[in-house]
Image (cartoon, rainbow, N blue to C red; front, top):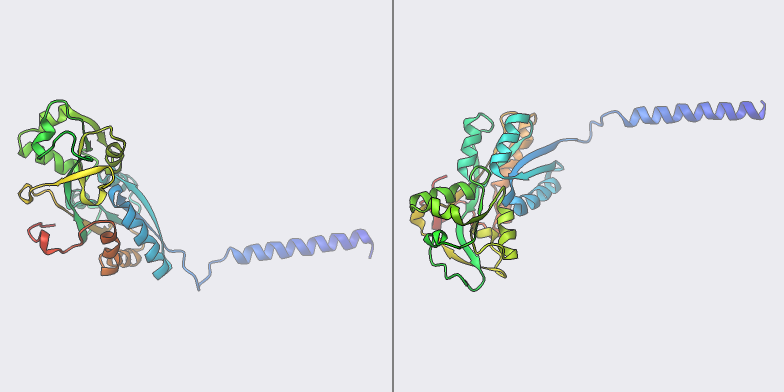
Length: 268
């Protein structure tokens, strides 16, 4: 065999080998799983939910991907795409909106989102109650009414106190997620804000509790979407989030976990 022929034969053998290897590697392996869950999560829940995703993957081998945004935005995304597996929101009102649209099923409950008055360290503006948000000249940062659970709850609170219009005159930021409100307080571009207990930065902010009778405390719900293509894995994830192991991640980041006798009067 000539040298040229040897090279040609070797090339053919190599090509056949590579093709065969490629075809074999492209076949599904019955011993592994490619299950991956897509979770819609409120932006204010990012820290505990991110750790829960990692812990769930380590425990089950099922990957978890997230999209974090305001609850209103997430509901719109679910309605348009009809894709994804799980929804967790900052409060039951937004979850109920998704349920009324037929996007999610019965929820489980994880923790409490506790609204709280936040103001700059040392309270230089002498804020003593929610009514001070209507004081002329005060710079107030709030979550969006349509995009965040805290924004929607705050709007109802201001309406209840008869100060809604006056507060709106002082609003310097209406943010799409609670995270931007936290940034505004950390940077000092706002004098006061309505935040949640878990989002407070004690180095830059002082706080004032809201009276329980104002009824702003929210319960964090989580449930499976109605259009998931992997209901068993999605249900397994929801069960993990609502387990003691899952709730511990919420407690780590300052969320009172559900149920808590202190919030016994708060209905989901």
